Length: 194
Image 1 (cartoon, one colour):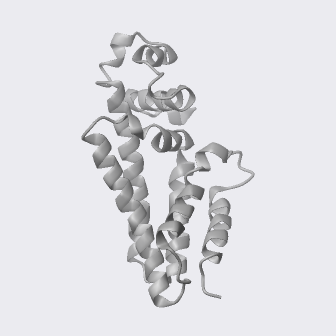
Image 2 (cartoon, rainbow, N blue to C red):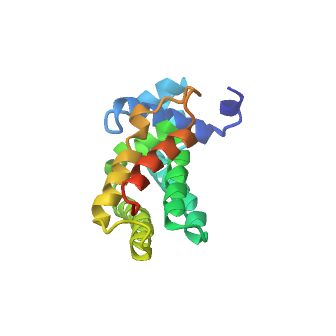
Image 3 (cartoon, rainbow, N blue to C red):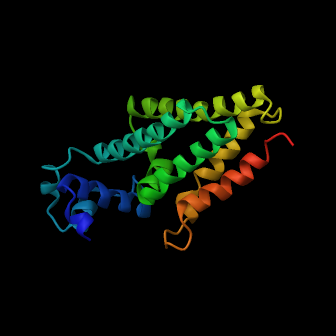
């Protein structure tokens, strides 16, 4: 609870909005709903935030930045392509596990961004996915990975990774790194040359 108390009022608004967006969906959540959940008047919200979409933009672009940053050191390393892919998977899962609510909003509600924000968001997402694709292509060229359809491989990878907010329970019984390593074992094991 001390963590929530250390957040700025704007961060508290964004966190509460994320929970409502996850539970009810972005389009079904009003500023009045958010104000009620925070125990304040709707007019008071506007001293902290301009609009509901500003909250969605903040959530989506902050998560995108975290995903991008998690991959930068992986790409710069001299590790094998298998290790790069493993570390990319672990980084992705660590970002998601840090805030499963924001992750769920990022995955499911981004489509409500208006232009040009939606276009910018989708371009960032495509760039991020392509960076994983380049790791897989590098592994194929080096002979570390089998000759596979890289689009299929990367889509399988992200289909697996991006469902995490729907099934992962942060109860402490299973830590995100263990989940990441198990997932990496399955996915990388399926494309490595024998």
